[in-house]
Image (cartoon, rainbow over all chains, first blue to last red; front, side):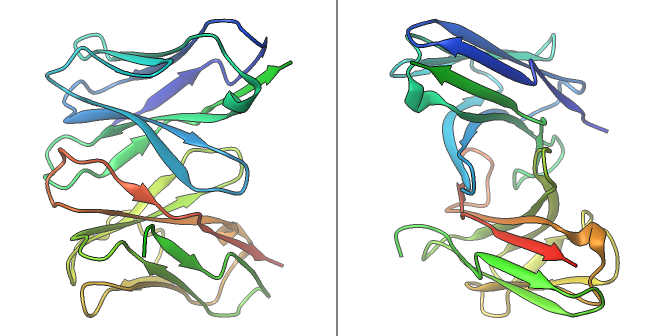
Length: 114
Length: 115
């Protein structure tokens, strides 16, 4: 059974810092990996989607990498801002299905203080 | 509509009551998922529809949970005889295609509290 772990569970940083969130998964037979952002009381917003054949994806200040063989992904946030405060979730698509059932980690709660 | 719409946003149910949660996916989206998110946890898969066909219901925790999507658009998740452990946020997501290459759009969820 696929298990996804995110470290750290919570992170508090001052504004302007660069930071890294970590995600590991136990079964490397994935189709893709996604990073989501969740604000309190809101649904999930997809930030980056990395196909299993890709090594990284970038969007603005965000960069996500994928090392499928070692079962790891990192989300790098550059020059953090208070507006980045949210819960960040990593999810992998389950191998063996064509429709993308996702297994999520428990999330990292990020607080960026001014 | 522009996004995935879920209703109600909040539901308080007495233990033993039946509830129905509604999801309006983005028009034309073939795939529809339901996830359950307990407090402080990541979402967990419940069930998947491709158009009106329920292709995977392996995540439904018990036979008290039932989902349908009769016309391939709106979906309803029904929970019978609710129990306190059913308290969670129920998230719906839809995707344009049935293949995994595309991402998902999630709704804001329904927060169910069973008292």
